Image 1 (cartoon, rainbow, N blue to C red):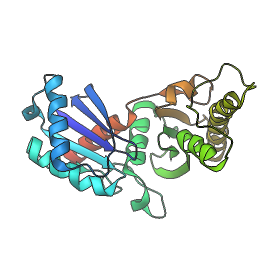
Image 2 (cartoon, helix red, strand yellow):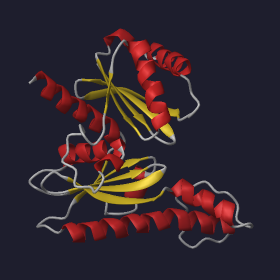
Image 3 (spheres, helix red, strand yellow):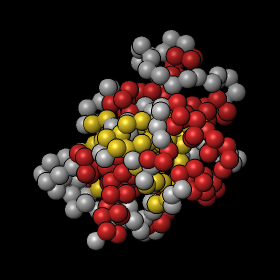
Image 4 (cartoon, one colour):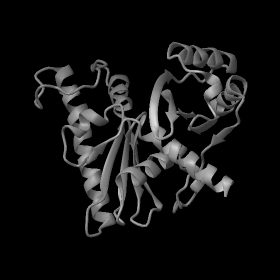
Length: 263
């Protein structure tokens, strides 16, 4: 079994693969002050609840955008699974990177692009992956299979928090699809602006990316992250929704690296 771990700013996501099949996944809150012992106990309990044997894990692959936790999780893996972790970065993500500073690209963005290209691309058609996370990121893979860059926007929750913090008379609202575009109260108006504003943002950016990329066929757009399914239901700009895109990207990066080492 392969254990894939993605450390994000909001969540740590873990997934267990048996071959290409994702058998089980968990989502934990990211705690920057979390210790190796705490994580080891928590992960042990998750495996126990699902009747999984930690000794069956034969490989561990990791992406992280929280450097202080990278070492913590790596040590947890060493203690709990007796394994060394393959940490994905620009050097081993499996994509040629056409970015001015390749090391600046988040590993999650790279593996999202790898998964989108491998699972949904083909025939020289470019791919756009959209991740609705703490930030909303758009990552572009050219028809030649190269990571060429992308767009980073504030996540919808960040935008909601900014409205609450910067406008004295506006309340904090949860983000969900309102029944009507025209809000008949302050909360309804804010909810409409946040939700449909993000739908319009996705449509606009994806359309502009497709225009810039050109080609005989428009780029394939694949969405992942918390709001992916809801946003996709409101627009034709998104072709596919893949809730576990990042985990599958980690699996693919692991496979590429282990095949290289075996060769």
